[in-house]
Length: 316
Image (tube, rainbow, N blue to C red; front, side, top):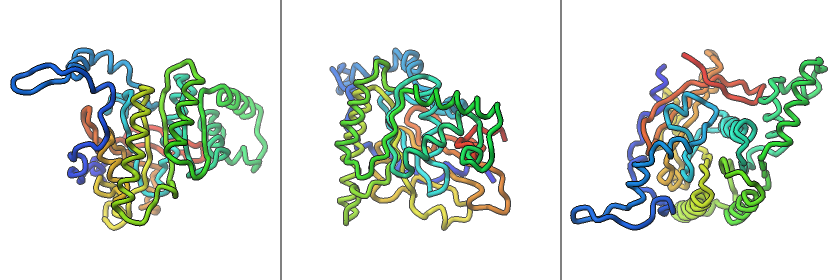
């Protein structure tokens, strides 16, 4: 089974022009070049590419960072999968690294899981104490108690906002993000939106696409304003389940989420091996970078440790 199979197909979605409005970083005066014009800022970004590379924020997954160059300020990253693939765990691990390790503020919106469950995952990942132990299935030993106490203090002091409010509108998400950013002196590390939002669902496919396009455009404008990467999750259609290899493709984005696939600078897709092949369980989740406007596409293997609330890179 080839990990690189994850990035097959779906090139038509990747190559469509982005519906996202130009960010302030890409707008400016124009330089005459032949019969056309070239934006000065676009040339400046090339000249200062080393500075831009240094401004990229690590995800906590070194192999992924080597492939993508990290999370670039003001860009949109889509993380998509079928249910039960570890999508929320993956983006929460990124939030943990940025907020707890790098000490950069992170706004995390999620209605897939409640705040208590998310904090539970954070404590498990940070302390290395199994979630079952903290659910009073057994008593903690002294070392586990110390590790958990340390993790509690780290999470409490972290510049991390977890908002599990249901039925948030895009306007409310934007307002809460800006208010949180204003409270922190450090520049924003990331804005993560892990929401399957009922209020965004409308009857016709055309209305659904328009609603998603407007929301992504507003979120992208805020990310550009704060110069922070924006991560948005999406649930894929049943396409992978009808294929023999079960690997997701860009064409598996649901109709209403196509504006996200087009606007995203980077698209990552997850496939949990053990869900589709339980008789050959390997504890692996495959992560594919199926679209990357800044460089290469490719895939990596992750070892999932859901009892510890985390995914870790795995050397094949």
